[in-house]
Image 1 (tube, rainbow, N blue to C red):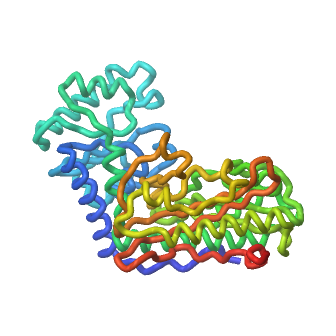
Image 2: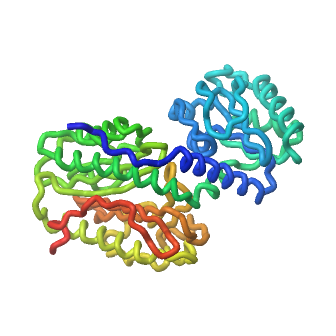
Amino acid sequence: MSNLIPIPKISSKALQEMFDYRLARLRQSMGEQNVSLSILTNPVSLRYAIDFDEYQVFQSNTPTCYLFVPLEGPLVMHGATQKDFPNVSEYRRPNFISPFDGGVELVNKSMLFSKEVDSFMSQHCYNKKIAVERFSPLVVMSLKNLGCQISDAECLLQKARMIKHQTEIECIKHSISVAEYGMKLMHENTISGITERELWSILHQVNISNNGSWMEGHMLSSGTRTNPWLQEASERIIEKGDMVACDTDMIGPRGYMADISRSWICGGGRGNREQRDAYQHAYDEVCFNIDAIKIGKSFSELSSEAFERNKIYKRNHYPCVYHGAGLTDEYPKIYYQEDWARDGYDGVIEQNMVLCVESYSGAEGGKVGVKLEEMVYITETGIELLSYYPFEDNLLVN
């Protein structure tokens, strides 16, 4: 059986419009903060700015490549092997600023890098306020010594990425279709005797076969390992009657995320009372919280108006009620009320956001946990469901 699914027909013109839109969103965010230059190293930020997709996991650990994005002027990419990324005017050899590339004595390397930045800014920037991502403190100190005012580029990128272009939505839908096909194959292969890792590998294979990128975690567990949540896949052998729960956390084709969760019983059937109760609770929570989303609502309102969870499930709740998604998990992260005073921050729901609606239901000290999650698109006229993988009807009938 082929792991390939049909690729949506997105024209080169539509893709270029999306690339232009993403760059314009970044520059708008820069302009609002009076930043004249952003220097990007995060592989997700590079993908957003210029669709850069080389050695992304390596780049996340060893920032060999970096991009100059001035508020106005040419985009200059350093370290790329290919030379055809959208909207890039010039390609240069990088100055190495990591211990792997430049050695453990980085003071001189940082100075060389900073002098290059200073030279670029003298030609293309109207002030010395720059935004950078996750550089060595030595690099930041060197830039400050040259009179630069430093801010965090990641904050600019997160704000830019929050509002999606229509072609981004089409890309997200394609990633979800890949993930849902992988989930279907996992579901069909959930048989007694298979290990969690073996089952989870099916989704990886489908993703890579369809030009996907990576998985953010290995979020599949079974039996008593479903409670508490966030236990990644292990060598545990799945048995008939076990609850199996998974969260795709998949970075799929064109770098877009499919973040959906489902749970099912190995061997099917109605399961036991604890399994059905947890499943029904998770399902009710997700449905209720989808219906609560409205343009103009504040994050704090969504938190305070969220589904009232059964007291036996409250302590083991998921880390958030909602979160954004695009190229990865994204701003915002909307917390449960019990965590709001410590972790919450406010904002407003806007048109063209994509949100993931979460539920984990597992009683504290229990033997069963259920993970469900949907992705939704916030349109002018309401909420569009992006994920369509079926729920388990047998577990919804009490």
